[in-house]
Length: 421
Ligand code: AMP
Ligand code: GLY
Image 1: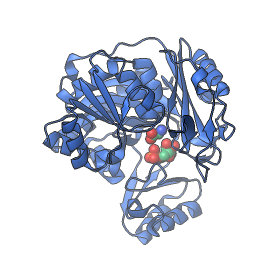
Image 2: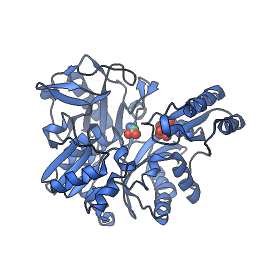
Image 3: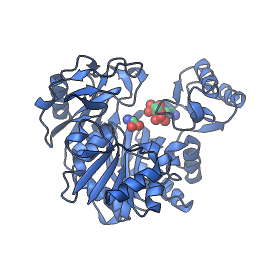
Image 4: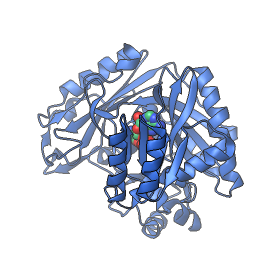
């Protein structure tokens, strides 16, 4: 099978790493890829949000199967263009990608089926939004409706912060994404991410993870795309998993199918869990980054068969082979991230790292310049390892992170603290 993966972050490096271990993979192309991906696959320069261009590229290169990594091509309809061209693709239609692209849309789906989620109001003018906040009181959560690269959410512990967030959003701080806002009740509890493959009908759980969104030790400081993750998340015990599937995932997927927008791809279910009761915080329509890295470490080559089955509507015939293992990924980011950071610093000693089924350094923002690996993004590397316990995975991941010579980078030293405390 000739396979094309769209994306160029740590998520896509881990997907490429798992996929190319599967003997069914003949040729693997990743667009645009990065310096790490270039070591295991062909990289292609392609505008991955241009569905027409991706379809032409796929045809010209005899691609049998396309795997879409990030959300932007999905909400832009790239999966639809590929299907129109008769190319098999893993990833939802633009209509189904509204589950991530519009918070209001997701709230409506939840309301239609009674799925547990925070009570909310939806507004397109600031005064009505503020009146709602005054009536509800703080703490309260203000969200830009559309895609805002993970930044359009303000968890306001007091009313003044919430009111100011509304003004910022309507003043255009998050662009088009903030032209509508969702305001919702503050949920208490512990967060977890739950990943489910879907073929439009069948839902197949493939694991859980916990991310660390804040940049600083002890979950302090501004939010990032994610500074580290581990899998499984202990809070996702069998009871919580059953409830998440029966109360949230299954009814929402059935409602999507009923509306003629059956969801195919991976559903990233962001949950808040209190007293073993999960509530939906959000859906994403793609793997998390860095959550994907820990899932791929654990699942390995079988993920290709599972994604292929999802794309062909054969998930009911599959099963997941689980080991009793744990994985952790530590993100190395450029100093200054998530604020301003310099690009172009050189990273050394990467070639001394082991690359095995137990430990891999996945690349995110890297490229090769004159034979050297240089940092080109905010999140740059993911030191990822597996172990029979989380403590073992942690020790391996941090040993790897310490070996990497990159003075311009930093990482959190406490990934996994909740599970290891
Ligand atoms: P989201 O982009 O919707 O995942 O929100 C970003 C983060 O804000 C989440 O990971 C939570 O930590 C927090 N958050 C979002 N909604 C709520 C809520 N209703 N109650 C408490 N925290 C929330
Ligand atoms: N790590 C969070 C996300 O991918 O949305």
